[in-house]
Each structure stands twice: as C-alpha cells, then as structure tokens.
Image (cartoon, rainbow, N blue to C red; front, side):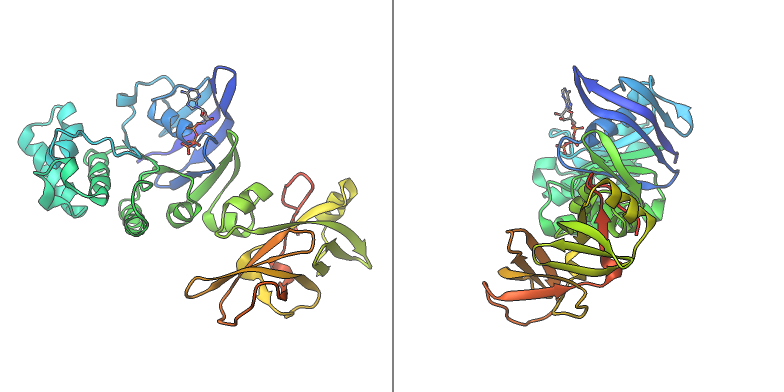
Length: 364
Ligand code: ATP
C-alpha cells in the first residue's frame, strides 16, 4: 500500500479548468472519497492518479515517488469502473484472472488465485458463467475481484455502486467497508452520494468547480461544514440554511428573519468580524436538530406546515416561513400535524451553524 499526493494539480481541457490547483495528501491505508456534484472534477482527478489523464501542471506522487509522467501500467494501481468494464466474451474466471494474464502468470496459477479472491467475494461458484449470465451485484463483485486479484499500491473506484439497486448498493457498501478494514488498502473512491462517502471514507474531500472545499473525516464534515455548499451537500435531507440579519445587543448575538427568532447564540470574535463586513449572515440548522414546540423559546423557527412525510421510524416535516423559505425537520413522533397548520420548532444553541455573506463558516 502507498500514500498518494496531489501537488498543485491543474487539468485544463482547452480553456476550461476541470481541476484547479488542488493539493491533497492521502495517507497509506486511508480510504478517501472524492465527493461532489456532477462535473466538479472528481473523475478527472481519479484518472490523473491512474495515469489515464496527464495534469496540465503540478505533480502526482504515489508512495513518495513522482509518477506524473509514468505510464499507467507502471503505477501499480487497480481501478474499478462505474460500468464494471468486464470482457463480455470471457467467463468470470478469465475476467478476474486477466490482470495476472497480462503479467505473464501461468494459467493454473492465475485461475487458482482468481478462485481464491472470488470465494472471498462469494462468486466462486459462478466462475464458468459469462458476465451477461450474472446479476448486476455479481458483476460488481467480479469487477472488484479483478481489481483485487493482483496486489496494488492504490485502489481507485469510480462510482462502483451506482448501477446497483438500493438494496444491493447497501449490501455492497457494507462489504467494501469490511474489506477496507480487513485489508487496510489505500483507496480513492469517487462518488456524488454523500451517504456512501460518510459510510466508507476515513476522510472526505468535498469538491466544487474543480477545487477541494473541505478535506476532513466524515464526522467533522457533518459537524463543522466549512461552507454553505458543504452544509447543503452533506446530510440528507440537507442542512436548513436561513439568511438572516445579525446584530449584537447587550453582548449577545441576535438574528432576525421571517419566522426566525434567535436571541442567545454565544458571541465570538469571528461573529463580530463577520458582522462588521456584512449584517447578512446565514443560519444553518440540521433537520434532526429541530424539535417540535418551544423547548427553547429563544431560538425558534415558525411557519405553516407544507408537507408531512412519514418515513416509518421518523417523519420529515417541511414548513414554509412567511417569506416562502422552506425548512425541514426530522422528527420521531407519530403526532399528526395537518398541512396549513402553524408550527414552531426550536433548537439548542450548540446546534446552530453560522456562515458569513460569502458562505464561509463563522467559528462560534
Ligand atoms: P460526474 O459525477 O458527472 O462524473 P465529475 O465530478 O467526475 O462528474 P469530471 O468527469 O471530472 O467530473 O469532469 C469535470 C469537468 O471536465 C466537466 O465539466 C466535464 O465536462 C469536463 N471534462 C471532462 N473530461 C473532458 C474531456 N476529455 N474534454 C473536455 N472536457 C472534459
């Protein structure tokens, strides 16, 4: 296994900068997810580690060695693609053993090794089938087996679960999680699915428009998102973001917006500085941190009930403030609330997030 490092890496296609000067250090044995919306540069970054794209400028290091100009086959990496890229005319045994074949391993040895890996992935009894004769989940495991059959320094994954249905996806995710803990592999995993990134990663690099906007362990990204973009992207449903006018009265921060009363947020130097630059700030509260009623009458958000979705163990209650802004709460009660009814939710001060006018987190 080996570390991976991006040093000021840029990739341009013509005049378009798909990746814009990123620095990223991935430790030996880490599982890092590149997370972000479509087109933010995740796949291009992954392909540059693999050597399938060359950086326009900057360097890529694997295990401390500069591999920027090294051919893909000399990088000792394995890649699992979104569409699995299995050879349709080869049975599973030959598909899985292919990386050993191109390295000149004799047929007995490579089939024995392929069977070993296939058994671990629970597809060992399908070795004579063609890819078209197995399910999507089994194809996904075949492509994983092919990546694992030959020891690599780094494993690269490009949305490997996106073609699976919801149930298989969960199962495969659990399996990958187990595999990572078992093998301690260095992995770089591209996804736009925040739940997948939260479940698998040791650290998540959140990308937006070719840049890394936050790089931290999943829990840190969830608890202290660096920007409104990250706050909105991580968490399902996403964090509620309410633009408000901030002022300091009697040494305490007060926020005002339609339907919002915030009277006791702890003051900090960061808030004072942000308010000097602009009175407009954004309050963030996660849906799971809103409680129905006024457990705290100093921090409340009110509006008219817009939708009440019962999800089984929980309900997603969306209400509309009177400027039309919507807020969602995740609540664990069977109380029936009717559409159109006035509702008030409250939150504890420690669950408030504040962002400045430019969307950057204000330290509280
Ligand atoms: P997705 O989740 O949709 O795969 P992504 O975050 O992986 O998105 P990339 O595939 O890295 O995004 O693409 C980043 C940007 O670069 C996109 O705007 C894409 O259109 C552009 N791009 C990628 N490859 C090329 C290419 N070969 N030529 C021109 N533009 C490209």
